[in-house]
Image (cartoon, rainbow, N blue to C red; front, side):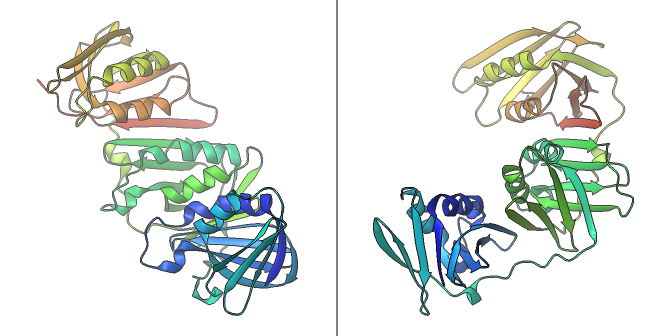
Length: 371
């Protein structure tokens, strides 16, 4: 193979796929990217066997071909080069030559045949969604996913494609986020699927501000067709827990509070919490919220009071401060509503004013109160 390409275009395209390369793998070829030069287009492919991303850029081809190259090494080489044109070639022994006006570089590649094949996604099932809506739904859920592979289903976002609404749900057992988009129509089919968090992170990162996203579904994969890139992801096959069952409906205590004031106070007070539990205690009264944290081991303690509206008798409850802040930061609006039952039950939090055509709800589990 032999082609010439702008260093800027090559570098930008490689940057899009580089994070797909696994940090550790027993399959050495996965540390490489596959370069395919054909019809004046350079395709760059990276995979970790769960996620495959393809991106492409223009190039001038003298001889078509394909080869795999160590991805991060290639990125490091391109990063340090000035913005010039490059001549890229490979011989029959998989030796790679990069030539520019400032120098020549040689490295070893591997044949295309060693690289995993791109997933085949042939299906009539697809949906359309505005880019800003998809990005918002991803950002409002992925933070609540688990990073523990003991329960693989919780490491992804649960998507429910219904006739008149699209739902995304994420939970790690300590907190839950559910977002429903209601300005949605899909009478052709209904489907539930779990998409890995890593794939959705790549999608959100590559989504342009404007436009509409097409999402294609096969039995085992989902395909996101983005401008100048495609992202394939395996669907997690494990069953998702019945999340509706863990969202209580028998609440009778309701607190309304200024969101930004609440966030600022929790941030300050949680600095004094025990680093192992991150426990922050809330004492809720009719017009005041008392926020308290203490680290007995090191003698640190903090307490703040902020105004609130509360409709019931005084209640004391404790949460992991990190989880509480994560939830608060992903809510919109000036005021939020906190629904509670008792000190041992889950708390439901949502904006007082929801976005148009949307329903956003967060759940957080309490922690045991320390005496």
